Length: 340
Image (cartoon, rainbow, N blue to C red; front, side, top):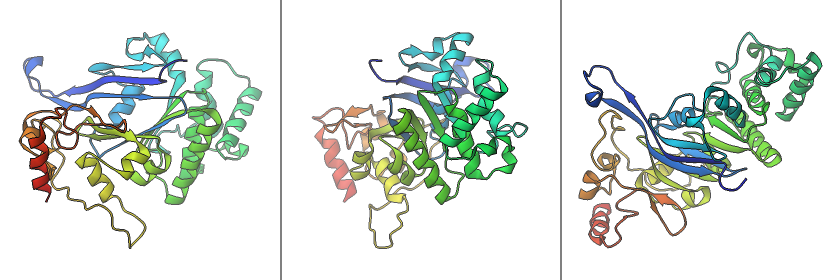
């Protein structure tokens, strides 16, 4: 296949709120706004940001569990939003999901083996021997004993349940797995095991991951590219090593500065972020981050910044750090004075 495995173009999702007499005047929650990115085979894109920034909404849009208000999701060049029910059903085999809660995402009445083979049996009939062989193979692939196939989810530990969820996602041999906070509910030692498992599976099978997390330590360990979101928009998208070595957007800089480091002698960037995330129903004019940004200037309060490509290939939406009008040097000068 030529081109990216997954392409997201100007993806937008608004949720209307009740109470208005006409659709034109009905207030909306702007959950996702004009998000674009691409994903290559065997690559991991991490999406990070504070709670409520739209990360999980993007996961549901990619899976077409919900329909976008605007924009397109192209899976191997096919716009999944335009597919009819039977066409979408076949295309969904190429993209699977691992959910945050390793217990509530599993059917408590089914055994581990049934949970793994159920997706496959939606497409083809399997004999008992085939079911057991498939379950045993996938359980071994995720580091579990084949005997577990006869147990219920309630008889498994949290780490075993999450491995079971991964085995279920692998059963249809997808090209992409979307992991929505897939390790946040697990102990640190178990987190490391699951992350290493995902990386091993990626190397072995060439699977691409969209990995959603609020934990920057996890992201730095597993990611190839990182998209930083704020109030429904991507504010910075860069290679993982570039982002952590040299964050450009003030919000990215603050997130990295606020992340705990297991070294008492470490002196990182100073976290200066204050205030709360604005309401997605009534976002600020201009840049949504400007009420909390120490570098904000007048233009930030008036104009929404567009994503600007920088010399190292990253894209940043910031009037100060990545001005789209290069000759507007007075903005940079004003910001430098504010930061001193």
